[in-house]
Length: 171
Image 1 (tube, rainbow, N blue to C red):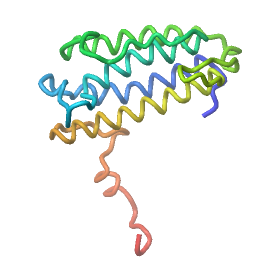
Image 2 (image 1 turned 90 degrees about the vertical axis):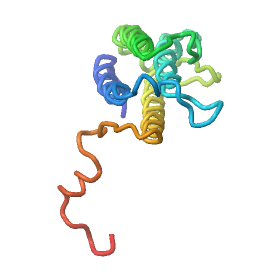
Image 3 (image 1 turned 180 degrees about the vertical axis):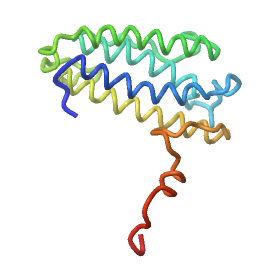
């Protein structure tokens, strides 16, 4: 995906985030801080991470400012309503910044926390990949706990297979 227009990117990003919201909406409050083993992210950690890093790293760097990422700990938001509110508040702040970027800024170089210099457009494209990675973690963590999750694009794998034509022999 080539990003040439901040408004078009912002609209696309909202659709990506909406798919993450759908899985976040099914997290049971009692499973928010569940970890499959000590030292791993909980669903709550992932949501706090996605919110905080979107606003305080991706959006700051897109403005060519240094990262101010606060981490993902429970001190940022504790309990499902507070975690979801933090996730949304950070997203709203980031969207204000993304929508306000002049299109010409997308070609400008920003510096990542690792010191790499790349165009703002490429940096924003990496943000999308980052979101998708962590959304996959949410799906896996919830599946490990037996929590039903929504299909990502409207159909389950079984529904896609049932609606498909027979495949080639041996496929």
